[in-house]
Length: 445
Image (cartoon, rainbow, N blue to C red; front, side, top):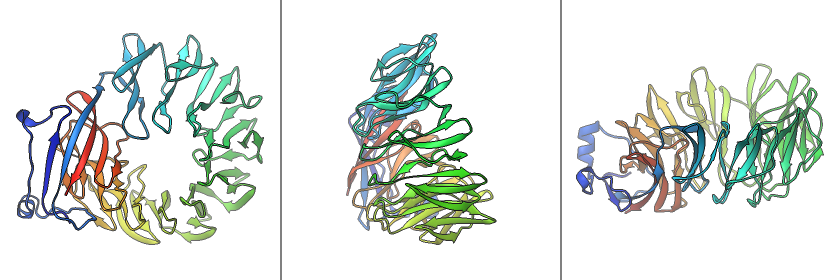
């Protein structure tokens, strides 16, 4: 547990009060006197740490950002979005205006996995195209909202409309056309050798894998199509008649009234879990074994070694965190929240909320309460010795590492998260002084 804390800033944009660096040093006595005993979440039993922050501008914050397009690169060092400018729309990437269009729709922009390329839909008169790094592709009558870079970042796969039919573009048009393409697809296998997407013809849905149609179903669940980490299997949830089932390769696992979550593979690809309703029962199915849950499962997480499992279930207006079959906490419902494991698989953390106050809970222990915590921001260091996240208090946002609070900023960015570059350094994105800023934070022992 950290007893003292201090924060230092360096370089970048000058954000210090009165133009001076500000040091914060709180002893345990002061913490107890002010807060009545602040609760800190930490892993390492180290002495005091301090956070040394450096900022770099990624451009000003326009007044007319189209938030639906805002995206952060996978390495969390770049941003891109569309913004209104007069009667047109401009594409802004790391503060620089690139191209101007009459319309770009409301689909999210997409970075490649190496964070070097950007794709988004654009209009050319009445037609639509997908632009990659400002270069527009073939024109179509419409473009679907799901754009997916192939794992080698060579091109983008997407759905496009030709007249009243839809086709999948994967370097070239893949089939003769269908009535609809499943949202969230196409999706690539991790090794980049396979592609899967759902298509609807008439009243039936089929999953296409490498251009080959699978079995016909009445429905395929959006967001359920997933490849195993070793790329050997594709799994999804489908409806046949009145029953829902899980499809894994050629295998069907049937007999469910509803699939509520999943399927989810463990990192080593050896295990699979999903949540269902069967009669009046709410079940979690792990490796084919059913166990009753206390509510509808909203998220499932395997540990990195694949041996542990955590999930969040909703019952009424409350959520419950369950780790290795044991309920750890009950808290207010948080849409989209999911538990995370440390790299060594020994610790699990998630964001919780009680009576309007937010905290991060690790291994069943609640941390300091804040006015808000970005639920996608918690991250463990590579050595599993530090836990960081982004919190908000008194209208300011800041990084918290092992209970130590960092430099205050005016705002965060949509879908804020933190990335550890090594055990003692992390980075993220914030807003301050009317600018987007990239922050680099050193953890100094």
